[in-house]
Image (tube, rainbow, N blue to C red; front, side, top):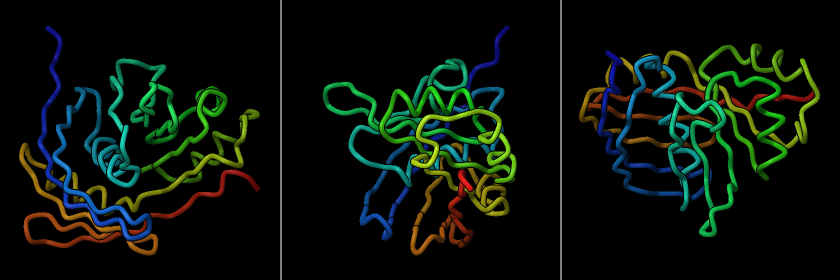
Amino acid sequence: MALSATMFRLKVELADSDRGVYESLDLRLAQHPSETMAYLVTRTIAYCLCYEEGIVWSHGLSHADEPALWVKSADGRTTAWIEIGTPGAERLHRASKSCPRVIIYTHHDPALLVREVGRETIHRLDQIEAYALDRPLIEELGQRLERNTRWELTRSGGQLYVTVGGKSFEGALTPIALTP
């Protein structure tokens, strides 16, 4: 018998002063049985930090040819391809050729991503945005994620501030240089 996804409901008060985005989000998250909590939290933060009209969750880990998230225009074109973790160089090359904007959020050591993108030629590598999330922040948020959770998520000056259940946590959102 196949394992089913674990469902979470997350209400987020988003204050992204770096982009001027202030929203109340009511998210439904499906955690695939093979998905780690760190990946789920990173995917959720990526959704919030990239939030704009047209952002959608992909079909998830079971569809290897899709990103974790993408932004689609009203006419169905993909305008942003958002990856989580350490995607392969070939995957990034395909994404960059098919979409004008590619963004990566990683919860792993950024050196792994830099090493991976150095393995092959990647179309428009210099235009791919990559960010490392502070690992202790991801772990703290993962420990506090329950079936129904509320976050207050603020991004300001490259720092993330998250309040969960009256406790506040912070961590850096560090840009990763993919080209020398």
